[in-house]
Image 1 (cartoon, rainbow, N blue to C red):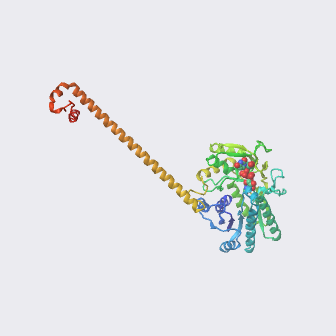
Image 2: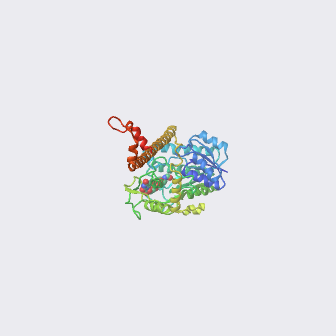
Image 3: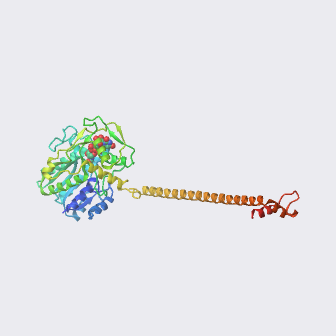
Length: 433
Ligand code: WQD
């Protein structure tokens, strides 16, 4: 039984691949690596000792998808592929509609062609909008997403509902994630955002490790217990296990079910910061900033449906999430990137130059120090010799002084110049005494 993970090289996809393999599934990953790194495939093998089959494709390409279905016996699909940056989606909505809808429509066409009828969709709590009371329940009205990212999630949920209505064999589980954070306890896979992180936890870990000067708390005037935004943070490993339960459910049932994946508990920004500092014994420098547009006061899940239908609930605590996030950050300061593996060649060249510069700088620095040390050594040696000479002179002088009459009397006329100056060689002779 193979499960296809579209976008499976990403943060949640890679953790889901690990838990699926641990549960005995064969895993196939299709990803264009636009927001992930191929290194993660090796890391999954390091954790599970089994390497998922990897196809580097754009999931919107029907022919590429057909090739995967031709080469593998796929019984279910977990669909992660899609852009997911909320702020970016407000700036370039068309990019989000084109990519997130095209990938989904191509995938569903090919699934239909190959009679693969089970899908788990990576949806989001964003679909609840900001009008519903917390905790959000799956039967509450959805809509009111304030950004293109959230609206594409909503549209795809509607597409899947319509397909289920038209095909009695079709099964879809719409997993509405709350706030996934943390990392696999091995520290081998984790969240590796490109550039400046949008989400709270990667910003916290990058601040704690010194990549960022401080964390900005976006607003302290929300209607919450301490004025900062409250969210339902869930450990990404718990979330991944929720996907294993969901694909099992999807392959054993038909119809569409929306299911929240959260802990049912809300934590504020300060709660996260304090839990992080307590779990890891590090300080997170913060500054207070203005509210971020589109943020809501509170967002946390009702978790009864997941427990009832999937027999799943989150088990790991906020401290576990903070500890594992920090472990990942410490072990991977540049995420999956390393100084030699920038995405484009010029970056590698630059980084090569950078390393060469530092090596050259070190060699020069080392040689200068060697020169200065040698100079100091010879200066000291010279001064020691001088001191010895002076001592000798003093000794000689003392010798002469003590025995002056004897030596002078031993000199004769020939040892003096016309004007009575004693010859240099006499002095040397005297000094050699
Ligand atoms: C959490 C809290 C911020 C950063 C988003 C998407 C959601 C899902 C998860 C994809 C908020 C505050 C944050 C910072 C801060 N995305 N914050 N300083 O916005 O709840 O959810 O990510 O699956 O669909 O909407 O998550 O981590 O960005 O913010 O104070 O530097 O932390 O105001 O209260 P969010 P987040």
